Amino acid sequence: MSVKFINLTKKSFLKNSPLFKIISLDRVDSYLGDNPCLWFSNLEYWNDAFEKRFVEMKYKKGSKLLDYPLKNKIFCTCFSDQRICEAQWYVYSGNKSIADCIGLKINRIKLLEILEKYSIQHNNDVYIGKVEYQTTTEIISSVSKNSFLNKGKKKFDINDRNSQLRLLLLKRNAFIYEDEIRIFIIRNENQLDTASRGISMSCHCKANELVQEVIMNPQFAILDNLKKRLETPLGKATSSGKGFGFELIKDSMGKPHPRVVVSRLYDYQHSKYIEL
Image (tube, rainbow, N blue to C red; front, side, top):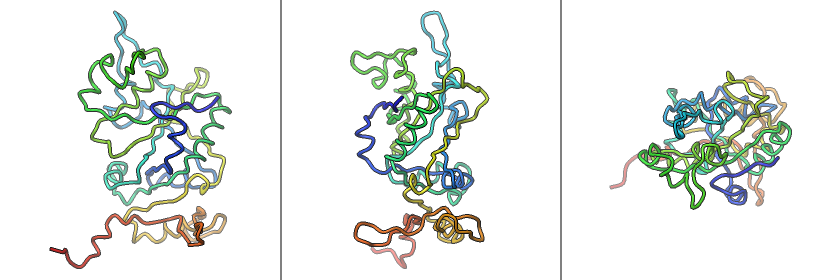
């Protein structure tokens, strides 16, 4: 069972490198520990009521009202095609300070390898989809009139898997800066647990095989302990616990390159004056 693609191809997914993801500090060990894991959320527990409306709402077909066919069967994790921007730091920090988040630079080839293995081992369908950004009016209009949901002769059908997933790739234009990629896992009937908040997918690899770089936002400049912890080679104990293995590496020219970097977003603040 291979990973399938929606609104992009395998070739286009792999040609753009790398992917990016922001996580909160309380999930650092999950992604960067000895056995890194990817978290896929049950869409029923998404925070954004607008985005999960396609999962929660009924669908009218003739005189019948139908549930979304993949309700409580589908789980999702999100990445960005673009290097992290300031808006993302604030959006993904929720109600916390942006200093409570770090960014991850993800190796696409390794990620796809992990997903392929999981799909085969668990007999679950896995899909990678490119988000389609539209106006709010377009998204809330009848699905039969939505251009993304009706491509040429391929008309929207609530019982069609491709149509079901395309609904979950619609997002408002206000978030176009995210340039989002969504990955879905669909569980089989005999694996369902309607109370499950999500799936923790073991990556079966070292953290620095999947995560090429850790990006600390500008407010992390004073948090040296965390930076040292991240850069400590695997297996070497530190006062703050076990390191994550993001030591210096060398590029093709032999130049040292840090695995843990601090965003330079606010470097301009170090200027002594503003040029007129």
